Length: 337
Image (cartoon, rainbow, N blue to C red; front, side, top):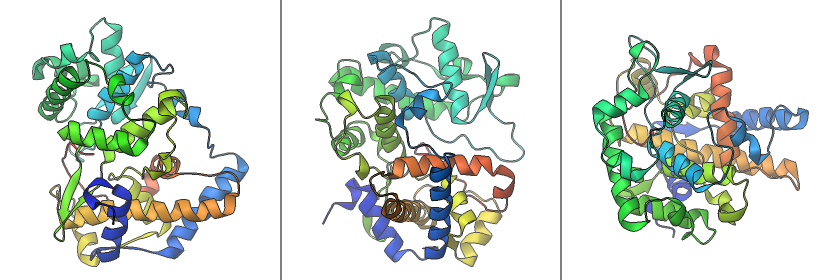
């Protein structure tokens, strides 16, 4: 049996099989599948891999500096949600206002354009909270959340890159032998801040949201070629966060226990590793795996994977932002998502 603590796909299946507060409804899964197939067939949902490059703040080349940019943003891609009483972290750059993760990307690009080598581990390995806050500052002087934790992550990954990978993540990528799973294993073992796992019912389970996003973003940046011609890319799961579960609720694919639903509606924080949080994230993985399996039965030669389905579900939540307010999300302050 696959080690659960190394494999998000197996962890998701296990968690869904024993979860007490979250269940996957097959009718809701089918409803989601119908929406996906309709959008693929009428062209609203593209399966092309070059879509990543069309996002304004993302790199469009595959030079070493672009790989290091993806690694940096993946290391810092966590906790952009806000309480209702807090100001939104947004960044306006080159006439376009971004929020959430894209705000940070815009801030990084703005800093690089000013000649500050923010993607160089020699530089960010010594960065201070004051300086990172200055580089990431948003509109109306709103700070990026969790600056201290982001600095801690930068110091950690810089040390590993400099000690083990000659100062560039490209050298890590070159050692993965064209395997997405090997790259995932290397990242989660060598860089502790990427080890997104939990103890659940006496077993260690893996979720690895940011590490899988790193693998997926590189795969999409390279368009599945060259160093990122991953033969096992379909082993990567969706990226279990707090937004995709809202889309799964919308379609009816997720059913929460009354006690969990009441807790989420109260907008109280959940601790990272709380069994209820683990169930939401693990069941998200398993639900999307079921969606992928059914969609592919209908597509014939064309195939989708969990990365593409996550992209759809995450974007769908943004598309239906007003309607999604009816579906609560779990609030966790964590470096893992």
